[in-house]
Length: 66
Image 1 (tube, rainbow, N blue to C red):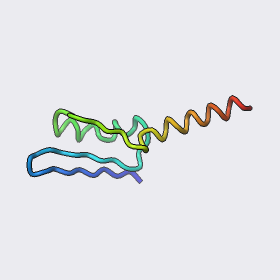
Image 2 (cartoon, rainbow, N blue to C red):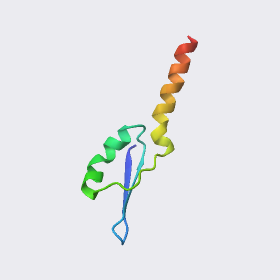
Image 3 (spheres, rainbow, N blue to C red):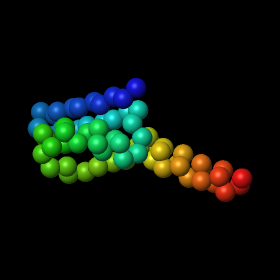
């Protein structure tokens, strides 16, 4: 299940955390929120972001074995 958690601090600093979305689809999922909030100062990719990439590599390795 896709989840987006948005936290707005007293200082106005906004943090967006995403769960259940792998790879570049995560960036697409948060795009509208990022546009509404303003400039992205920092982006940290979680394991979920890299999950799709890892699965693709595993599939390529498996195909090479066949």
